[in-house]
Length: 374
Image (cartoon, rainbow, N blue to C red; front, side):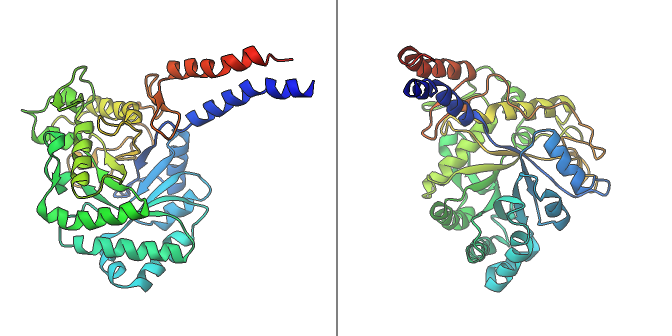
């Protein structure tokens, strides 16, 4: 009977749809720096991303060799604007048009651009005045080219004058001068703010006050209580302090992408393979849960893909997940643990794996009873 057969397919269709939404638990990417003279060719790097299941990349300038290697890879890309170009891009719309045509339009749609980062950690500072007008000119150039790509900037948490407890989060007066209008533009465009969040440096500079377990996501108990919110790890506290600072200047509607975070494996205080592996693996396992203030999956980018031998000696050379010969510095899985949270809808409901299976069974039960397979 045709009608019965049609109805009998409903449970299968529901099962497929629910399982399909589970794909893409959260976004974990890796920064790909090029400050080394012994790094593999970009094509080999793209293969390394693919073989490790890394679906997103950030580069700090529009390196054409890298862009060529990314064609057809389906790796989502954040591409940076070099600081030396900021002034011209801010003051000259034709320069912005040329930049977009040369570095973006020439590779689109073969390269999956997700964001353009106009400057990295330059607010506050001498170049900060150029960030917003450069963002606006690049956004206008993208629109003229028929390209829909989010434009933002990447900040460090030195923009915060207060961060403890997280509810006290606030920008410094100097940073607020730039951050408030930038957040207004981001809120209008729907683009996220890119934020570099490093528990390592906070721990290193305040080891007498911050426990290592709090910095490495290994604390089993709440360490910081802030009103209704309890914090078991420093990453969440730092990110929530940023959210509060944004809210205080009208940026509550702006999302955040963690454009850098990581832990060095050598070269300084608490920099060893064990701590680096623990931090980065726990980060991957954790970001699907979000923070106490914003319990939604976080898009985050680990710094960095390789140890880069031309960077400043010390920890800066040792943030890599891989050595230049492409061997891992330590084992790491880019799939979240079995306890990771799986979002299944856009309205904020989240379920763990076993809870999701139960939920599916609840959905299917009435159909299986009312419309048995014929």
